[in-house]
Image (cartoon, rainbow, N blue to C red; front, side):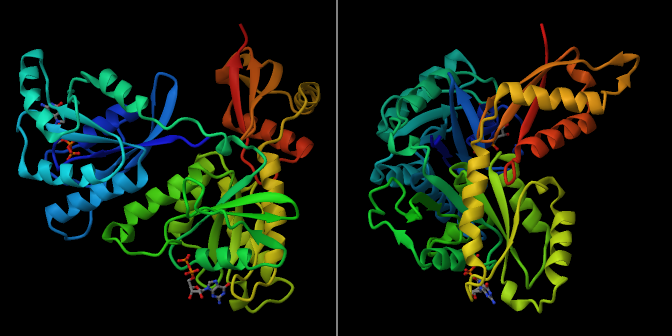
Amino acid sequence: MRKSVVAIVGRPNVGKSTIFNRLVGERISIVEDIPGVTRDRIYAQGEWLNTTFNIIDTGGIEIGDEPLLVQMREQAQVAIDEADVIIFMVNGRDGITGADDEVAKILYKSNKPVVLAVNKVDNPEMRENIYEFYSLGFGEPFPISGTHGLGLGDMLDAVVSHFPEKSFEEEDDLTIRFSLIGRPNVGKSSLVNALLGQERVIVSDIAGTTRDAIDTPFKKEDRDFVIIDTAGMRKKGKIYETTEKYSILRALKAIERSDVVLALIDAEEGIIEQDKKIAGYAHEAGKAVIIVVNKWDTVETDEKTMKEFEQKVRAHFQYLDYAPIVFLSAKTKKRIHTLLPQVLKASENHAKRVQTNVLNEVIMDALAMNPAPTVKGQRLKVFYAAQVSVKPPSFVVFVNEPELVHFSYERFLENRIREAFGFEGTPIKIFARKRN
Ligand code: GDP
Ligand code: GDP
């Protein structure tokens, strides 16, 4: 099920990143008095009344040296393009400014629901100030204070009330959704085209009936796949689409909606820091991951080359030790037929459930083979394990004292589980819980 997306727009310094931080619950973007200060992160998850959603702080998308007004227009456009609900933020201490009117004009023209938030209403006396904001034309203004955390509940109730109804189409579990991520020019669009141009792939012509017309459904050997568009695959046009923050945002959004993520590497150029960062997002999101080494046609190969390249990949992407590596060329289409079977396998493992009794046998055997170490005179006791969820497969291990489960022991258990059940392509999670 796709999470709803909320975007915050408004002119600089009204308090967008302050509210973003509040809603996300961690201090992840930098708040400073300087307008337009660089933000670390502009896309994160928030939660309200059992509903999780994603938030975009559009103020974090800075568009080069463009004048303020252009920046604001582009940011409003990002919100319109990417969000289900828009929080339009103004400053209750300043009244309505010309810049607010500009943003309002753009938001009117969209069909997206807008919730008007009047920030910096730090005390009840200041609530008088909010009435003039009715004239912006977005209905009831919600007074809030980012600094004091006031009024956020009412504002969020309004936001959540506009979330789209759950759609059945997206709950269909048999369709395998995957995306391609990687730095510019690594070959994402070429690989998509190569996959879709492949024999026996039937591209559905109902594209455009889905919510996101840029997702491409196709069938291969009776399995339904959907390629989810990532930044860089769409035709670039609008100014903001060329900014780095925006392309990361699109990649994160695509990852979010995927079961399997293909992390592309350029064999010609080798592995760079940015590759690791991008692949790291997929891992953190708990998605199945396949490492695709593209442009393999540019490499002079002998019997050792692939092995050597593989070792290099493993050394750079240690946290992705579960990810299979596929070598191919989007250009010559060599080995391209090896990709979809891996996608299928990874997605099956990502959704795999194991039997509780077999799981416990595996864990107990592991304990017998390698008893947990004693820490400060206390020995870890493992009572019972259960798989609590899929996508990714997650396990709870009930123990006498969770703090005794050190990283290395957790790793050992993970390896035993992997050996027994074969979770190739997917991360798995293990949580230690105290047995009551
Ligand atoms: P942005 O540019 O819209 O993202 O604004 P920031 O979140 O960076 O906030 C700009 C300034 O306003 C910072 O100095 C914040 O501390 C301050 N600020 C944010 N929210 C409030 C609030 O509710 N009340 C007051 N008094 N100041 C606030
Ligand atoms: P994107 O920015 O990641 O979507 O990358 P593109 O698909 O636009 O490809 C960037 C460039 O790399 C283009 O000039 C492609 O022709 C080239 N390219 C893509 N795949 C391959 C490949 O497998 N081998 C070679 N030699 N070039 C490729």
